[in-house]
Image (cartoon, rainbow, N blue to C red; front, side):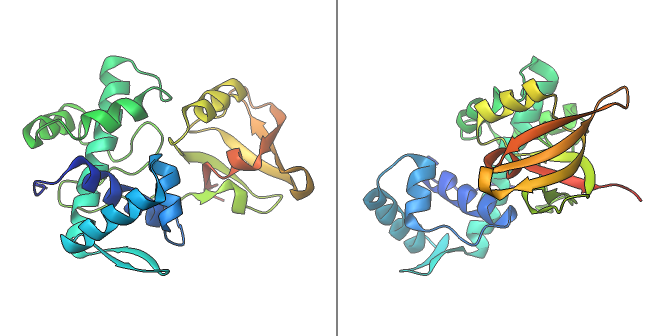
Length: 229
């Protein structure tokens, strides 16, 4: 998918807006974008006006931001770049899953379409990145991701971790310490809202289970694919 020539700012904004929708968000307000990109609200407001003028978004005051068809196309292409680069860094260069997000944020704006196509071919056209996020294909289609956020799963239900948010490297390192990663089987034991904790049973490689207390923020960064039965 060939991108129009856009600024790094435009690419970052449309990608952020698209990812919020992909993950079930209710829409981003100016303050949300400002917090995510570490800029002022006034800077975001000015940039949104530019994106609206350029036909990438529709921005209605107090009602949030919606991508136009062109904005959607650009966002999907940028997400494809980001996730393919993350996969390349892990599979070919030995990066760990907590190291690749910032690297990919920089590289996604710099590599050519030819380079990206060759990375895709070299990796065997992967469908998901090292965090389980679906990688948009060259035609713009996005593979299915069957998981449900752990924070939305009722006690007694279980499944296998099939996706983990890559937004916070320290959280990924925390999951490594707990032994929670893609393919880990978890069962929700108890939701303790008063303590901000979701208690889960983690099944180890040997079949034994151990109890783990996950903070709410951690539970909101894990998706579980349901068991086959």
